[in-house]
Length: 350
Image (cartoon, rainbow, N blue to C red; front, side):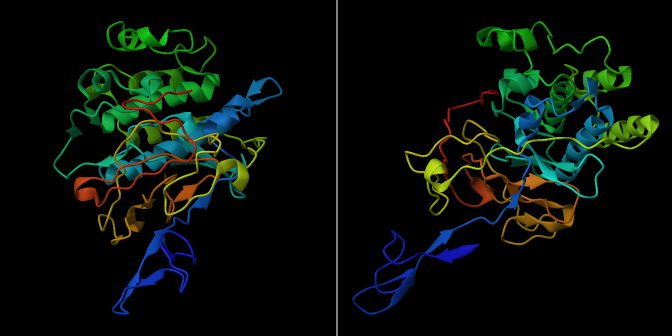
């Protein structure tokens, strides 16, 4: 979406909003880039887990948990069909939106494509990409910078653990030792003894140290739907308290995608720390130069994009922001910041 600059703004002039005049009276138009994105009113999955939303009356709402996991798997099926890698899949980067058609009352959408990249059709992986969240990074990403669809599946296995345990993975492991624990010791989060065997087995397959042995997201989705069907019955609704929206005074102002001012407060959810490539797709699945892929149900536009299995999947939460870099064939450079602490390399899961 292009909007002309208001009078007096850096892009406009006092004579006419969005334009300026040179000595020859020719008009040069300037524009601000703005993103119109879907609002996910229930915040992130991490917010919901912190509220123990999947625990009701001391019992786990397993049906809602399986359906939420299936939402994520379905989104990833669509992404991988377009050869798009997410590279930072975690509970904080999954957004929840109210839904009147779902028994649990919400639908989950994959968000935050700040580290996403699109592979060429013949490529199976990308090298030298040391990026992501340390607690959710596959061993081969930590050691070799090798990102692939299998690396996303590994991250999903950790998300499954987050869903069931509503805790931070590897909370007791010192950060300085975490990489060694995962890559050399083969350490993974532990499920409680009462966790359903089929669920634990699927998560274990997802985070297998051998990337070639991990299932595809299509296989993951099939298994999740099978387990949900075996449970039968209706899904009890989840009680999720929406996060408080940031006021303009608190979040700072966005101007042309540049981000919040220095006084802006940090966003609560959906951050992706570290610079990365945002896969802005043009024409790959029916979209054009706007970077959309309507045919595959994916829209990758900018801060807070989502993917789901519906006709379109672009969204943003008012409390979410990140920085992305568009590079090489992925069009142009764009930097944005909205009160988030950004660092190099991998991001923090906190």
